[in-house]
Image (tube, rainbow, N blue to C red):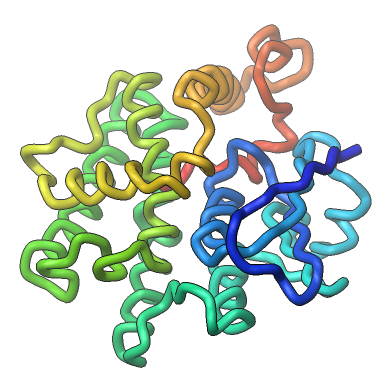
Length: 268
């Protein structure tokens, strides 16, 4: 069964109880945790075992059966970006994640979709492959990062410290709570994904994002992530090679069972 622990987050008190079902290694979970910290909301956190999901998680998210799930006043919401937008709508007097201008809000949502639809899957493909397939995935990652770099250099985000402006916003949360995996993946795969010379503005943005206190409170230690990522990569490569999970020493030693792989955030 899942365990529960109270997370204190400084600022304002929520008018009704907030409970978050998540996984410690999931960048999707980290998005919601970070957003609530930025907005000063108290919440209760429930750590899920993705190989043995709790009845509560399955009841609250019967469609996708994944984390994160936010329960507010007994009502459940799934999908991280939807949850982030809900937090902005439900607590308009707290720090806003979305810009006030309707066009800028739409742009933030567009690039969030880009992160989940194009950039994330490309990074995941690098992590879960080798050889020519991996080389093709690396090119996709670099092509996608080049698009973000261009927007930071001469596009809609030109001159901004963060994508959200002077402060971390919705797009920063979505991109940033996965970008820390880039360094982890580089260590595990020995493949360079973010070069400071090739993507200087993106690289600077990432360093600034990681320096935020709320981010430091949210993201697990690099050592823990490395251990987790090494086991996960071994398992994914074994499965891809047809080794399967049953009776495999790689699968047995892996930090997470194969049944959980769809829920593990190996995206940016």
